[in-house]
Length: 86
Image 1 (spheres, rainbow, N blue to C red):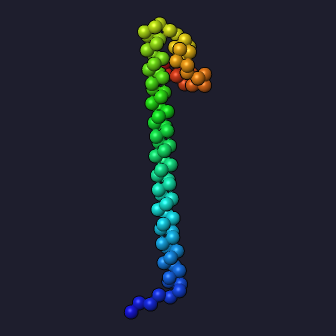
Image 2 (tube, one colour; image 1 turned 60 degrees about the horizontal axis):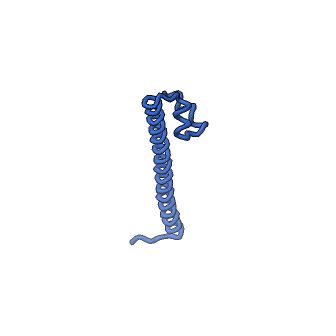
Image 3 (cartoon, helix red, strand yellow; image 1 turned 90 degrees about the vertical axis):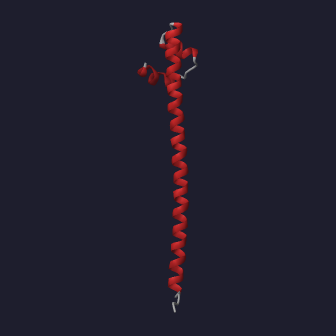
């Protein structure tokens, strides 16, 4: 017959709490990672869309890069990165 001592019971309880804490921590970490990945993906998608739109305006309407970005209302802080990819 197995008997639990007070120490055994407390240790088992601590291990359960640790396990539960690890599970919750993993869940939160996965959620945050997924959220950050989605944000990065959206940013990259917007950059590609803006680049394509600038190129189309330049080719179809014979605009220079600044005029195309003005027409698209692209913020000044984003223009340098786009110009580097043209």
